[in-house]
Length: 300
Image (cartoon, rainbow, N blue to C red; front, side, top):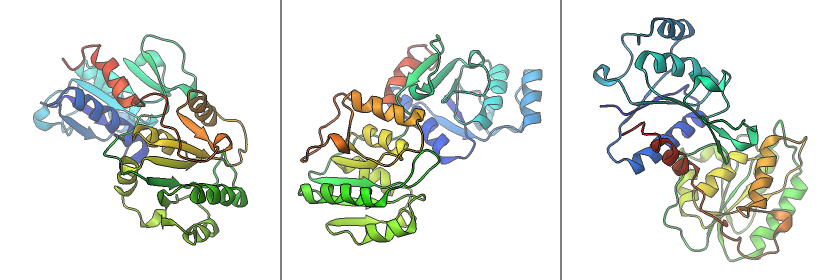
């Protein structure tokens, strides 16, 4: 029997969130099975909702009705609600939805989106992800370099001044990667840095970063790469934030500042050299949300 049905719009970031929650549920309920299906078309979703019957040919093994629906991304919302009504199942959305919150049984919404206080809303510290701590390699560190974005500018001189201090301060073994937003000129300079194994983003496979974060003791992340901050914390790394210019005040950066205030990350400007401190508390948002969900009895 299928226990969890993920509605996936195919976007890696959204699927990463849904799988993160589903895998946390599997760790707490061994034997739980998960499938993934694409969203219904608009017409099919509306027809399903109006009729209260799931369409034939839905990719569910043997037509078995699951116990729980999960989805992230606006394109999944209509299907979540249509199948919720057709199958009479709880539906969990992993973001601030475009439809009214009351339509969903549970909304897991990052606190930086400032969700209202409601019985069916849980505030999360960032988006959920699949990262888990592994066996840490002493002295192993990873550095994640982003690039300019809608919210963040780019100061290459400042970045390399920070990297010089980080790379020259400790006897760590460093691996570094870029992102698809990293300027080509910056990548060329990164490739020439001493005492670091630089792997451009274009040469990393899907398992490269999870492997690095799982085994690294320490992770420095540029402040524009907010999702990587939460993944590094979930992997059990001591996390430092390399500063980048901010184009404007935004909620994502407010979330990172809250992490610093809670002692979970250390901004470069507050670093006095030496090893980064471990987070003041365990960071496992997917596991915490799974516990809250199971407390509602939806997979019993």
